[in-house]
Image (spheres, rainbow, N blue to C red):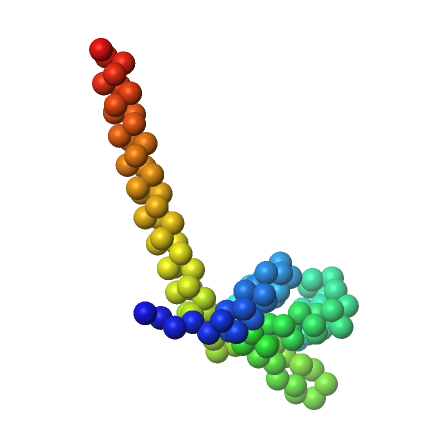
Length: 118
């Protein structure tokens, strides 16, 4: 059984709960970018983008490096494996429940058809 770090999951899901932060991850998936570039892309202030990047960085999803006056952002080393495993466990649970519900519905339809013929 997979052991999950609730602190890590909380940080990741909190970071991913914001559309701007998800957009930043998508952007960084295409290419590294400076905080200034990200702020311009998302029509935000530099301070606002720094806060978003800070949340992503604390979750381990983004790393930053300061070279001179420019702070460059790139995707972090974490690949969301733990989060994916957690979601997959519940996806399987719900899929099994819907499969059982489908069986009940099919049985009810079959009985309804048989009763309708009498």
